[in-house]
Length: 191
Image 1: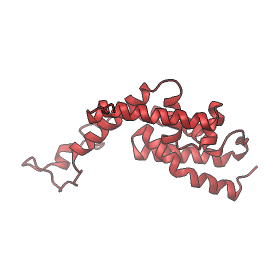
Image 2: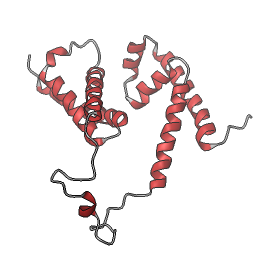
Image 3: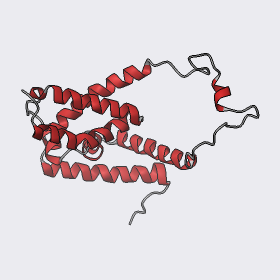
Image 4: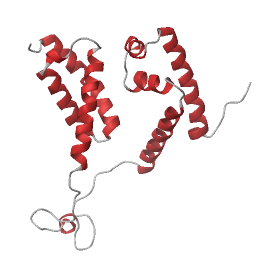
């Protein structure tokens, strides 16, 4: 069976979601792009492997998870950058002048304090999600970070849409409370 134009367009439409997920996992845009490209290629090479037992998005994320693991393994084996180039030339001589200053003006990297605050916030948020009881953390991740549809989540976890809504509502309330304590440093006043 060959990939139909409709199948190809559906996969291409899901590419941004896959890329977002891969970037969250790998924290490296180039590696994330590679993993997504490999996942999409695998899906296009064997369209018959998609049996329709789940949503196309769920199936693609399953493939992507394996590609992410492959990407992590591959990149963990790469040699670290050394202080010299392949031809033996010293990198310091290439980058810095005799006076110790950069040979070329460097790009503005933004405010590192803002980037650090954002990274700290994400750590606090992840810790708060980890503290959610039972399936609440899993539901929240599936809905908000993987952006799965409600019916997909209900089918995957064998719950009703009403139960899903209630559990998501409770998860958001707990996350708000946790973030107020762990990030904003305030608690809600009891009224």
